[in-house]
Image (cartoon, rainbow, N blue to C red; front, side):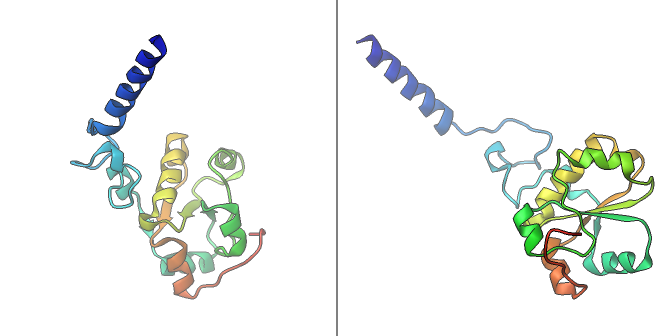
Length: 162
């Protein structure tokens, strides 16, 4: 009989946890959204929407100018090897901190992904800003992600080399 009470208790706790809507105020969420919709592309955190964007044509012109530039592909390594922007590096979030050691100050950093609303690129930018990149390096996100780059006709490189 005591085991039946624990099972009933567990079922009630699970019911409360999963059935009661979560609606606490989270500063990263846009006004009026529910916490359960945090990962939706439509309800991006406000702070992500304010990050500077660069178009594929602007990035193409910047690459041709020869100015210092770091392009970070934040997609998976498989997607990177299938096709990426020429010169782009694939640096997962835990290795991007090392770039501070060798990256010249003032170098433009451009992040891109292939997620609607550039969500993963914005997440990576938030991570980089949190770890001190904002003091010495301008960071932008490629508007429209890799899809916009492919449509721009500026070239795509395949393989694992930048």
